[in-house]
Image (cartoon, rainbow, N blue to C red; front, top):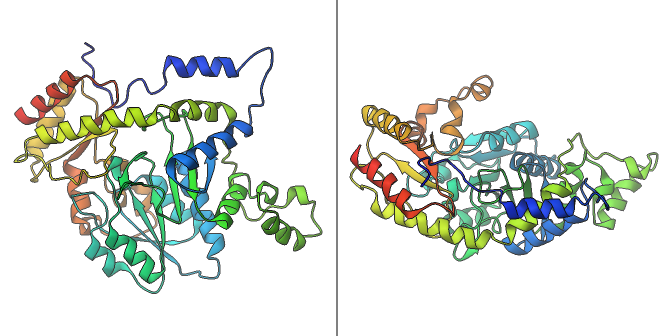
Length: 393
């Protein structure tokens, strides 16, 4: 048995390579840029998630940015629009809000599902609150009925970051199918991989068409809806209709190669997720509840990691745990998503003056939380060994 315990293992398989080799037939070289395989993957992904539309991009970060650029375009008559999001998230969530020109507003989390502390969230909402951007952290469901009710009552747009949570559910419905839009990542370390890749999902046809445009330099010709497209072209009759750029945007297109991988991996995603769910539930049930937070909301979870958070602030114990994990070749990341509190980061502190210490629970996770790899091929004996090591430090 391999003594190493990496964050991820075997996420690109020999079967995937065989499928790629068959696709890359030297005697019949296929189209490799964004084309029919991308569209096939988009359609299959929409069906799997439970949304009408999907737009494949080249990363989860690109999915964040395309979504926020599209929302800024749709809300451009509201220059003071604010977006509420957690400091515990990936850097690109916050960066996408900043790049789009929205004002970011931050809310502390709870330690049950690592999503918003609901009372804190309510206190942040005002007349300028137009978007709530949630993060499903490491496969733990971030949704509650109260959160959905708040968005509906106050007509706030809900956006879901599901980059780390493919297959997570709320009320037996997949995360990513609740928000006005949702973002997924297919990075190597996630539930499934296209090497690099991402997806924007939505049920809104107008948003779908704007996202298609902003995926490809803002080109109007990328839109699928002829009515939306013709209205814009009519307003710009002095331009070549093949080259009308709606707003400044980037090239976030993916390739056919990435889509071929995505189609192959999607076919075994549910089976792999069943193993991850079983592993996580077993792990958390055996962890020492006096030392670690084990009352995590497991309902609907689908985590590619083992979440380890100290119950009490204890830097000596934290340092002992990290030293012991390294001694046993167990790879880990402190801080959970994005390395912890994003408000501590230089990119943020340069432009905003917000005290990171005001976010008590985010700070606790930042200092005393880790994640460790949970993948389908992980041997139960390795899980038992990990539990033994953590409980005995």
